[in-house]
Image (cartoon, rainbow, N blue to C red; front, side):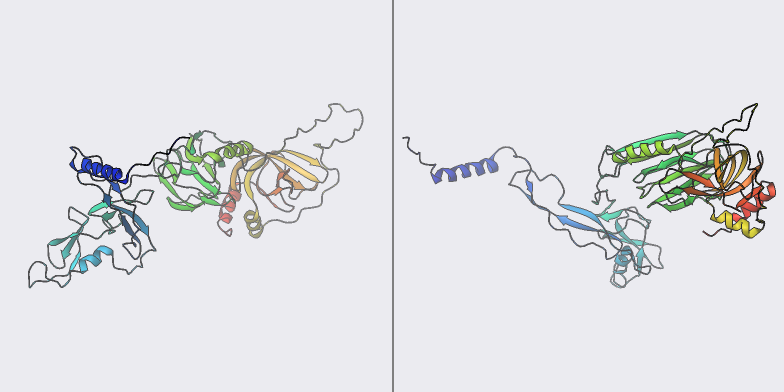
Length: 472
Protein backbone atom coordinates (compact mmCIF):
# COMPACT_ATOMS: atom_id res chain seq x y z
CA UNK A 1 0.00 0.00 0.00
CA UNK A 2 1.16 3.55 -0.68
CA UNK A 3 1.93 5.93 2.14
CA UNK A 4 0.02 9.16 2.76
CA UNK A 5 2.13 12.23 2.16
CA UNK A 6 2.01 14.94 4.82
CA UNK A 7 0.29 18.20 3.82
CA UNK A 8 2.19 21.47 3.35
CA UNK A 9 3.60 23.00 6.49
CA UNK A 10 1.61 26.03 7.83
CA UNK A 11 4.77 28.11 7.52
CA UNK A 12 4.58 27.77 3.75
CA UNK A 13 1.10 29.35 3.71
CA UNK A 14 2.36 32.33 5.72
CA UNK A 15 5.34 32.83 3.42
CA UNK A 16 3.12 32.62 0.32
CA UNK A 17 0.77 35.29 1.72
CA UNK A 18 3.68 37.62 2.52
CA UNK A 19 5.12 37.16 -0.96
CA UNK A 20 1.71 38.04 -2.54
CA UNK A 21 1.35 41.21 -0.43
CA UNK A 22 4.91 42.35 -1.25
CA UNK A 23 4.25 41.90 -4.96
CA UNK A 24 1.01 43.88 -4.71
CA UNK A 25 2.50 46.79 -2.75
CA UNK A 26 6.04 46.96 -4.15
CA UNK A 27 5.39 45.80 -7.71
CA UNK A 28 6.00 48.16 -10.58
CA UNK A 29 2.44 48.47 -11.97
CA UNK A 30 -1.11 48.52 -10.61
CA UNK A 31 -2.92 45.20 -10.69
CA UNK A 32 -6.33 46.57 -11.79
CA UNK A 33 -9.28 48.32 -10.19
CA UNK A 34 -10.54 47.64 -6.71
CA UNK A 35 -13.85 46.01 -5.84
CA UNK A 36 -17.12 47.56 -4.75
CA UNK A 37 -19.00 46.63 -1.64
CA UNK A 38 -22.67 45.84 -1.96
CA UNK A 39 -25.07 48.75 -2.36
CA UNK A 40 -26.53 50.11 0.85
CA UNK A 41 -30.22 50.72 1.51
CA UNK A 42 -32.16 53.44 -0.28
CA UNK A 43 -32.61 56.61 1.74
CA UNK A 44 -36.06 58.13 2.39
CA UNK A 45 -37.42 60.37 -0.36
CA UNK A 46 -36.02 63.91 -0.39
CA UNK A 47 -39.55 65.32 -0.58
CA UNK A 48 -42.63 64.75 1.54
CA UNK A 49 -44.96 65.12 -1.46
CA UNK A 50 -44.75 65.17 -5.23
CA UNK A 51 -41.49 64.13 -6.89
CA UNK A 52 -38.13 63.70 -5.20
CA UNK A 53 -35.06 61.46 -5.13
CA UNK A 54 -33.66 58.81 -2.83
CA UNK A 55 -30.01 57.77 -2.74
CA UNK A 56 -27.91 54.76 -1.88
CA UNK A 57 -24.13 54.39 -1.72
CA UNK A 58 -21.30 51.88 -1.79
CA UNK A 59 -17.58 51.86 -1.00
CA UNK A 60 -14.56 50.93 -3.06
CA UNK A 61 -12.20 48.39 -1.45
CA UNK A 62 -8.69 48.46 -2.95
CA UNK A 63 -5.07 47.86 -2.07
CA UNK A 64 -2.50 50.66 -2.27
CA UNK A 65 -1.49 51.54 -5.82
CA UNK A 66 -4.60 49.81 -7.20
CA UNK A 67 -6.84 51.80 -9.52
CA UNK A 68 -10.06 53.23 -8.24
CA UNK A 69 -13.21 51.20 -8.79
CA UNK A 70 -15.04 51.84 -12.01
CA UNK A 71 -18.45 53.41 -11.50
CA UNK A 72 -20.17 55.79 -9.07
CA UNK A 73 -20.22 55.74 -5.33
CA UNK A 74 -23.82 57.03 -5.23
CA UNK A 75 -26.94 56.12 -7.15
CA UNK A 76 -30.12 58.18 -7.24
CA UNK A 77 -33.62 57.12 -8.18
CA UNK A 78 -36.87 58.96 -8.66
CA UNK A 79 -39.50 58.68 -5.94
CA UNK A 80 -43.06 59.69 -6.68
CA UNK A 81 -45.33 60.53 -3.74
CA UNK A 82 -48.83 61.95 -3.58
CA UNK A 83 -49.27 65.36 -5.19
CA UNK A 84 -48.57 68.33 -2.95
CA UNK A 85 -51.56 70.32 -1.74
CA UNK A 86 -52.26 73.56 -3.65
CA UNK A 87 -51.03 75.73 -0.78
CA UNK A 88 -47.78 73.84 -0.14
CA UNK A 89 -44.52 75.83 -0.22
CA UNK A 90 -42.33 74.80 -3.16
CA UNK A 91 -39.04 73.08 -2.31
CA UNK A 92 -36.81 75.81 -3.79
CA UNK A 93 -38.87 78.56 -2.14
CA UNK A 94 -38.38 76.83 1.20
CA UNK A 95 -34.61 76.69 0.74
CA UNK A 96 -34.40 80.41 -0.10
CA UNK A 97 -36.64 81.28 2.85
CA UNK A 98 -34.15 79.64 5.24
CA UNK A 99 -31.90 82.71 4.77
CA UNK A 100 -34.64 85.26 5.50
CA UNK A 101 -33.61 87.65 8.26
CA UNK A 102 -30.06 86.33 8.43
CA UNK A 103 -27.07 88.53 7.58
CA UNK A 104 -25.61 87.35 4.31
CA UNK A 105 -23.72 90.20 2.61
CA UNK A 106 -22.74 92.05 5.76
CA UNK A 107 -23.12 91.95 9.53
CA UNK A 108 -25.99 94.45 9.65
CA UNK A 109 -28.04 93.99 6.47
CA UNK A 110 -30.70 91.26 6.15
CA UNK A 111 -33.06 90.45 3.30
CA UNK A 112 -36.10 88.38 2.34
CA UNK A 113 -35.28 85.87 -0.40
CA UNK A 114 -37.30 84.26 -3.20
CA UNK A 115 -36.10 81.95 -6.00
CA UNK A 116 -34.47 83.50 -9.06
CA UNK A 117 -34.58 81.41 -12.28
CA UNK A 118 -32.59 83.67 -14.60
CA UNK A 119 -29.12 82.57 -13.44
CA UNK A 120 -26.92 80.33 -15.64
CA UNK A 121 -26.85 77.22 -13.41
CA UNK A 122 -30.38 76.19 -12.55
CA UNK A 123 -29.15 73.73 -9.92
CA UNK A 124 -27.56 76.50 -7.82
CA UNK A 125 -29.70 78.02 -5.09
CA UNK A 126 -30.06 81.43 -6.73
CA UNK A 127 -32.27 83.69 -4.63
CA UNK A 128 -33.50 87.21 -5.39
CA UNK A 129 -33.54 89.84 -2.64
CA UNK A 130 -37.14 91.03 -2.37
CA UNK A 131 -37.37 94.74 -3.28
CA UNK A 132 -33.85 94.81 -4.70
CA UNK A 133 -32.33 94.29 -8.14
CA UNK A 134 -29.79 91.61 -7.28
CA UNK A 135 -29.69 87.91 -6.50
CA UNK A 136 -27.26 85.79 -4.50
CA UNK A 137 -26.16 82.19 -5.00
CA UNK A 138 -26.09 80.11 -1.83
CA UNK A 139 -24.42 77.10 -3.42
CA UNK A 140 -26.16 74.00 -4.69
CA UNK A 141 -29.82 73.29 -4.14
CA UNK A 142 -30.70 70.17 -2.20
CA UNK A 143 -30.98 66.95 -4.18
CA UNK A 144 -34.44 66.41 -5.59
CA UNK A 145 -35.18 70.10 -6.24
CA UNK A 146 -36.96 70.65 -9.59
CA UNK A 147 -34.60 72.25 -12.10
CA UNK A 148 -37.22 74.86 -13.05
CA UNK A 149 -40.99 75.30 -12.74
CA UNK A 150 -42.77 72.63 -14.76
CA UNK A 151 -39.54 70.78 -15.56
CA UNK A 152 -39.34 67.00 -15.44
CA UNK A 153 -35.68 67.19 -14.45
CA UNK A 154 -34.47 67.17 -10.86
CA UNK A 155 -31.21 68.50 -9.47
CA UNK A 156 -28.82 65.81 -8.27
CA UNK A 157 -25.33 66.71 -7.01
CA UNK A 158 -25.53 70.04 -8.82
CA UNK A 159 -26.67 68.62 -12.17
CA UNK A 160 -30.10 68.64 -13.77
CA UNK A 161 -31.00 65.00 -14.48
CA UNK A 162 -34.05 63.14 -15.74
CA UNK A 163 -35.05 59.62 -14.80
CA UNK A 164 -34.80 56.75 -17.25
CA UNK A 165 -37.49 54.12 -17.56
CA UNK A 166 -35.64 52.16 -14.87
CA UNK A 167 -36.29 55.02 -12.43
CA UNK A 168 -32.61 55.91 -12.03
CA UNK A 169 -31.64 59.56 -12.38
CA UNK A 170 -29.34 60.24 -15.31
CA UNK A 171 -30.05 56.82 -16.79
CA UNK A 172 -30.17 56.44 -20.57
CA UNK A 173 -32.64 53.55 -20.34
CA UNK A 174 -35.69 54.20 -22.50
CA UNK A 175 -38.80 52.22 -23.30
CA UNK A 176 -38.88 50.73 -26.77
CA UNK A 177 -42.02 50.80 -28.93
CA UNK A 178 -43.16 47.61 -27.24
CA UNK A 179 -43.14 49.22 -23.79
CA UNK A 180 -40.10 47.27 -22.54
CA UNK A 181 -37.49 49.24 -20.64
CA UNK A 182 -34.23 49.03 -22.56
CA UNK A 183 -35.81 46.73 -25.16
CA UNK A 184 -34.99 46.48 -28.86
CA UNK A 185 -38.53 46.44 -30.35
CA UNK A 186 -38.32 42.66 -30.71
CA UNK A 187 -41.38 41.75 -28.65
CA UNK A 188 -43.92 43.57 -30.84
CA UNK A 189 -44.78 44.13 -34.49
CA UNK A 190 -45.31 47.35 -36.42
CA UNK A 191 -48.64 47.67 -38.24
CA UNK A 192 -48.61 50.38 -40.93
CA UNK A 193 -51.20 50.66 -43.69
CA UNK A 194 -53.09 53.10 -45.90
CA UNK A 195 -56.88 52.89 -46.11
CA UNK A 196 -57.91 53.88 -49.65
CA UNK A 197 -61.53 52.68 -49.90
CA UNK A 198 -63.69 55.46 -51.26
CA UNK A 199 -67.06 54.33 -49.90
CA UNK A 200 -70.35 54.19 -51.74
CA UNK A 201 -72.13 56.84 -49.70
CA UNK A 202 -71.49 59.61 -47.20
CA UNK A 203 -71.34 58.37 -43.63
CA UNK A 204 -69.19 56.37 -41.26
CA UNK A 205 -66.85 53.72 -42.65
CA UNK A 206 -64.46 51.40 -40.81
CA UNK A 207 -60.77 52.09 -41.30
CA UNK A 208 -59.18 49.61 -38.90
CA UNK A 209 -59.57 47.77 -35.65
CA UNK A 210 -57.05 48.92 -33.03
CA UNK A 211 -56.66 45.95 -30.68
CA UNK A 212 -56.20 45.99 -26.94
CA UNK A 213 -52.52 46.48 -26.07
CA UNK A 214 -51.69 48.73 -29.05
CA UNK A 215 -49.05 51.42 -28.52
CA UNK A 216 -47.81 54.50 -30.38
CA UNK A 217 -51.02 54.86 -32.37
CA UNK A 218 -51.11 57.40 -35.17
CA UNK A 219 -53.64 58.15 -37.93
CA UNK A 220 -53.71 61.08 -40.36
CA UNK A 221 -55.18 62.26 -43.66
CA UNK A 222 -55.56 65.38 -45.80
CA UNK A 223 -59.21 65.96 -46.75
CA UNK A 224 -62.48 67.41 -45.53
CA UNK A 225 -63.42 64.02 -44.09
CA UNK A 226 -63.18 63.43 -40.35
CA UNK A 227 -61.58 60.64 -38.35
CA UNK A 228 -63.86 59.09 -35.75
CA UNK A 229 -62.96 56.84 -32.84
CA UNK A 230 -65.35 54.34 -31.30
CA UNK A 231 -64.95 52.03 -28.29
CA UNK A 232 -66.09 48.42 -28.23
CA UNK A 233 -69.52 49.20 -26.75
CA UNK A 234 -70.42 51.34 -29.78
CA UNK A 235 -70.05 54.75 -28.12
CA UNK A 236 -67.93 57.39 -29.81
CA UNK A 237 -64.89 59.09 -28.31
CA UNK A 238 -64.73 61.83 -30.94
CA UNK A 239 -66.50 62.93 -34.11
CA UNK A 240 -69.47 60.63 -33.57
CA UNK A 241 -73.17 61.04 -34.33
CA UNK A 242 -72.47 63.53 -37.13
CA UNK A 243 -70.96 66.04 -34.72
CA UNK A 244 -67.38 67.27 -35.24
CA UNK A 245 -65.43 67.36 -32.00
CA UNK A 246 -63.02 70.18 -31.16
CA UNK A 247 -59.27 69.48 -31.23
CA UNK A 248 -57.93 68.44 -27.85
CA UNK A 249 -57.02 65.49 -25.63
CA UNK A 250 -59.60 62.75 -25.05
CA UNK A 251 -59.64 59.76 -22.68
CA UNK A 252 -60.21 56.41 -24.37
CA UNK A 253 -59.33 52.80 -23.54
CA UNK A 254 -56.97 53.77 -20.74
CA UNK A 255 -54.88 56.21 -22.77
CA UNK A 256 -54.89 59.85 -23.89
CA UNK A 257 -55.87 60.49 -27.51
CA UNK A 258 -54.54 63.77 -28.90
CA UNK A 259 -56.73 65.02 -31.75
CA UNK A 260 -55.49 67.86 -33.97
CA UNK A 261 -57.03 69.51 -37.02
CA UNK A 262 -55.70 72.32 -39.20
CA UNK A 263 -57.13 74.42 -42.01
CA UNK A 264 -55.03 72.86 -44.82
CA UNK A 265 -57.13 70.61 -44.27
CA UNK A 266 -55.17 68.05 -42.28
CA UNK A 267 -56.33 65.89 -39.41
CA UNK A 268 -54.41 63.64 -37.03
CA UNK A 269 -54.92 61.62 -33.89
CA UNK A 270 -52.19 60.12 -31.74
CA UNK A 271 -52.15 58.00 -28.59
CA UNK A 272 -49.25 56.59 -26.61
CA UNK A 273 -51.13 53.53 -25.32
CA UNK A 274 -51.25 50.80 -24.35
CA UNK A 275 -54.98 50.52 -24.97
CA UNK A 276 -57.02 48.66 -22.37
CA UNK A 277 -59.72 47.57 -24.84
CA UNK A 278 -60.35 47.37 -28.57
CA UNK A 279 -60.95 50.61 -30.48
CA UNK A 280 -62.41 51.10 -33.95
CA UNK A 281 -61.01 53.84 -36.16
CA UNK A 282 -63.60 55.15 -38.62
CA UNK A 283 -63.86 57.93 -41.16
CA UNK A 284 -66.87 60.17 -41.67
CA UNK A 285 -66.84 60.52 -45.45
CA UNK A 286 -67.97 63.80 -46.96
CA UNK A 287 -65.83 63.67 -50.09
CA UNK A 288 -63.73 61.01 -51.90
CA UNK A 289 -61.12 59.46 -49.62
CA UNK A 290 -57.55 60.38 -50.70
CA UNK A 291 -56.08 57.85 -48.27
CA UNK A 292 -55.83 57.51 -44.49
CA UNK A 293 -52.45 56.52 -43.10
CA UNK A 294 -52.48 54.67 -39.80
CA UNK A 295 -49.92 52.82 -37.73
CA UNK A 296 -49.47 51.24 -34.32
CA UNK A 297 -47.26 48.73 -32.52
CA UNK A 298 -48.81 45.50 -31.34
CA UNK A 299 -47.46 42.74 -29.03
CA UNK A 300 -46.43 39.71 -31.05
CA UNK A 301 -48.91 37.44 -29.29
CA UNK A 302 -51.80 39.75 -30.28
CA UNK A 303 -50.92 40.11 -33.95
CA UNK A 304 -52.31 36.73 -35.04
CA UNK A 305 -55.73 37.24 -33.35
CA UNK A 306 -55.81 40.78 -34.80
CA UNK A 307 -55.30 39.45 -38.33
CA UNK A 308 -57.96 36.77 -37.90
CA UNK A 309 -60.44 39.20 -36.39
CA UNK A 310 -60.08 41.80 -39.12
CA UNK A 311 -60.32 39.13 -41.83
CA UNK A 312 -63.41 37.63 -40.22
CA UNK A 313 -65.05 41.01 -39.84
CA UNK A 314 -63.93 42.17 -43.27
CA UNK A 315 -63.57 45.65 -41.70
CA UNK A 316 -67.26 45.51 -40.72
CA UNK A 317 -68.60 45.12 -37.21
CA UNK A 318 -71.74 43.29 -38.33
CA UNK A 319 -71.93 39.80 -39.71
CA UNK A 320 -72.46 39.69 -43.48
CA UNK A 321 -76.04 38.94 -44.43
CA UNK A 322 -76.73 36.28 -47.07
CA UNK A 323 -77.94 37.53 -50.39
CA UNK A 324 -80.63 35.40 -52.00
CA UNK A 325 -81.61 35.75 -55.67
CA UNK A 326 -85.36 36.12 -56.14
CA UNK A 327 -86.76 33.45 -58.46
CA UNK A 328 -88.10 34.86 -61.69
CA UNK A 329 -91.69 34.01 -62.66
CA UNK A 330 -92.09 32.12 -65.94
CA UNK A 331 -92.60 34.30 -68.99
CA UNK A 332 -95.73 32.54 -70.25
CA UNK A 333 -97.26 30.54 -67.46
CA UNK A 334 -99.86 28.08 -68.79
CA UNK A 335 -101.38 27.21 -65.46
CA UNK A 336 -101.29 28.46 -61.92
CA UNK A 337 -98.18 27.16 -60.24
CA UNK A 338 -97.20 26.82 -56.62
CA UNK A 339 -95.74 30.00 -55.27
CA UNK A 340 -92.05 29.48 -54.40
CA UNK A 341 -90.78 30.34 -50.92
CA UNK A 342 -89.53 33.74 -52.17
CA UNK A 343 -91.81 35.66 -54.52
CA UNK A 344 -92.31 39.14 -55.84
CA UNK A 345 -96.10 38.73 -55.84
CA UNK A 346 -97.69 40.94 -53.17
CA UNK A 347 -100.14 39.55 -50.71
CA UNK A 348 -103.60 39.25 -52.26
CA UNK A 349 -105.27 39.96 -48.93
CA UNK A 350 -106.15 43.58 -48.36
CA UNK A 351 -103.98 45.26 -45.76
CA UNK A 352 -105.60 47.20 -42.92
CA UNK A 353 -104.74 50.89 -42.62
CA UNK A 354 -101.57 51.72 -40.71
CA UNK A 355 -101.73 53.69 -37.46
CA UNK A 356 -100.92 57.38 -37.57
CA UNK A 357 -97.20 57.85 -36.89
CA UNK A 358 -96.90 61.55 -37.52
CA UNK A 359 -95.61 64.02 -34.97
CA UNK A 360 -92.40 65.14 -33.30
CA UNK A 361 -92.78 62.77 -30.32
CA UNK A 362 -92.91 59.73 -32.61
CA UNK A 363 -89.86 60.93 -34.54
CA UNK A 364 -87.90 61.62 -31.33
CA UNK A 365 -88.73 58.23 -29.80
CA UNK A 366 -87.70 56.16 -32.81
CA UNK A 367 -84.64 58.23 -33.71
CA UNK A 368 -83.18 58.03 -30.20
CA UNK A 369 -84.05 54.37 -29.52
CA UNK A 370 -82.92 52.99 -32.90
CA UNK A 371 -79.49 51.58 -33.69
CA UNK A 372 -79.42 52.98 -37.23
CA UNK A 373 -80.96 55.99 -38.95
CA UNK A 374 -80.23 56.45 -42.65
CA UNK A 375 -81.56 57.61 -46.00
CA UNK A 376 -82.13 54.74 -48.42
CA UNK A 377 -83.67 53.97 -51.80
CA UNK A 378 -85.86 50.88 -52.03
CA UNK A 379 -84.63 48.50 -54.76
CA UNK A 380 -86.74 45.40 -54.11
CA UNK A 381 -89.41 43.85 -51.91
CA UNK A 382 -89.81 40.14 -51.14
CA UNK A 383 -92.27 38.21 -48.95
CA UNK A 384 -91.69 35.01 -46.99
CA UNK A 385 -94.19 33.55 -44.53
CA UNK A 386 -94.96 36.37 -42.12
CA UNK A 387 -92.02 38.65 -42.98
CA UNK A 388 -91.25 41.29 -45.56
CA UNK A 389 -87.73 41.97 -46.75
CA UNK A 390 -86.70 45.17 -48.47
CA UNK A 391 -83.45 45.52 -50.35
CA UNK A 392 -82.26 49.11 -50.04
CA UNK A 393 -79.33 51.19 -51.18
CA UNK A 394 -77.95 53.26 -48.31
CA UNK A 395 -77.29 56.84 -49.41
CA UNK A 396 -76.75 58.88 -46.25
CA UNK A 397 -76.16 57.73 -42.67
CA UNK A 398 -77.40 59.86 -39.77
CA UNK A 399 -76.78 57.44 -36.92
CA UNK A 400 -75.10 54.04 -36.72
CA UNK A 401 -73.73 51.78 -33.98
CA UNK A 402 -71.57 50.10 -36.60
CA UNK A 403 -70.88 50.84 -40.27
CA UNK A 404 -73.45 49.99 -42.95
CA UNK A 405 -72.81 48.55 -46.39
CA UNK A 406 -73.98 50.20 -49.57
CA UNK A 407 -76.63 47.51 -50.09
CA UNK A 408 -78.56 46.28 -47.06
CA UNK A 409 -81.63 44.20 -46.28
CA UNK A 410 -84.28 45.73 -44.01
CA UNK A 411 -86.84 43.34 -42.52
CA UNK A 412 -90.37 44.21 -41.42
CA UNK A 413 -92.81 41.94 -39.55
CA UNK A 414 -95.87 40.63 -41.39
CA UNK A 415 -96.99 40.68 -45.01
CA UNK A 416 -98.54 44.11 -44.48
CA UNK A 417 -95.71 46.14 -43.02
CA UNK A 418 -96.49 49.50 -41.51
CA UNK A 419 -95.57 51.86 -42.88
CA UNK A 420 -95.22 50.25 -46.35
CA UNK A 421 -92.26 51.20 -48.52
CA UNK A 422 -92.77 51.80 -52.23
CA UNK A 423 -90.27 50.59 -54.83
CA UNK A 424 -87.77 53.11 -56.21
CA UNK A 425 -88.65 55.67 -53.54
CA UNK A 426 -86.28 57.21 -50.99
CA UNK A 427 -87.03 57.08 -47.26
CA UNK A 428 -85.56 58.14 -43.97
CA UNK A 429 -85.52 54.92 -41.90
CA UNK A 430 -84.93 54.26 -38.20
CA UNK A 431 -84.21 50.56 -37.67
CA UNK A 432 -83.09 48.22 -34.92
CA UNK A 433 -80.34 45.64 -35.04
CA UNK A 434 -81.66 42.14 -34.28
CA UNK A 435 -79.18 39.29 -33.62
CA UNK A 436 -80.38 35.72 -32.99
CA UNK A 437 -79.29 33.93 -29.82
CA UNK A 438 -76.97 31.59 -31.71
CA UNK A 439 -75.49 34.47 -33.73
CA UNK A 440 -76.44 32.98 -37.09
CA UNK A 441 -78.77 35.84 -38.05
CA UNK A 442 -77.97 39.54 -37.93
CA UNK A 443 -80.77 41.70 -39.29
CA UNK A 444 -81.90 45.28 -39.59
CA UNK A 445 -85.50 45.42 -38.36
CA UNK A 446 -88.06 48.11 -39.16
CA UNK A 447 -90.57 47.83 -36.28
CA UNK A 448 -94.31 47.84 -36.85
CA UNK A 449 -95.54 51.45 -36.91
CA UNK A 450 -91.91 52.51 -36.92
CA UNK A 451 -90.18 55.52 -38.39
CA UNK A 452 -90.10 55.45 -42.21
CA UNK A 453 -90.73 58.84 -43.79
CA UNK A 454 -90.33 59.80 -47.44
CA UNK A 455 -87.02 61.61 -47.64
CA UNK A 456 -87.06 65.35 -48.33
CA UNK A 457 -84.86 68.30 -47.38
CA UNK A 458 -87.45 69.22 -44.73
CA UNK A 459 -87.38 65.71 -43.23
CA UNK A 460 -83.58 65.82 -43.32
CA UNK A 461 -83.63 69.03 -41.25
CA UNK A 462 -86.13 67.55 -38.77
CA UNK A 463 -83.95 64.47 -38.28
CA UNK A 464 -80.80 66.47 -37.66
CA UNK A 465 -82.69 68.67 -35.20
CA UNK A 466 -84.17 65.79 -33.22
CA UNK A 467 -80.72 64.15 -32.96
CA UNK A 468 -79.63 66.96 -30.62
CA UNK A 469 -82.35 66.07 -28.13
CA UNK A 470 -81.53 62.38 -27.66
CA UNK A 471 -80.40 61.51 -24.12
CA UNK A 472 -76.70 60.73 -23.86
